[in-house]
Image (cartoon, rainbow, N blue to C red; front, side, top):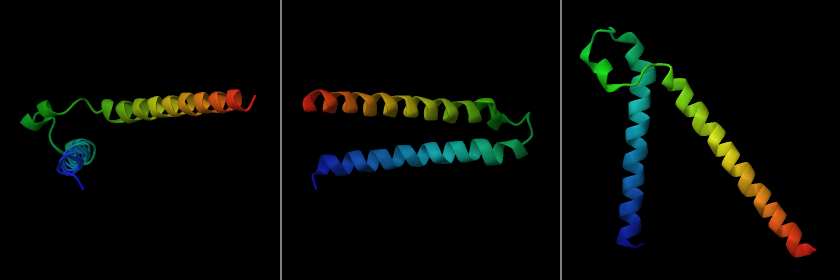
Length: 80
């Protein structure tokens, strides 16, 4: 395994762990903290806790649908 591959893998793990920790604190812990506490300024409003994953899921499904459709069209053209 190359050093660059390990560095990229480590970076991806750190990013995903950071996102998971931030989202977990935002959704699970923050509702139990007083609304005038200073920690609230580091987080988006609660509405975005649902909107962002829904938007990301819809975008992923759209991308996958377009990708699968284009692959099916290319394979159909090759057979004809």
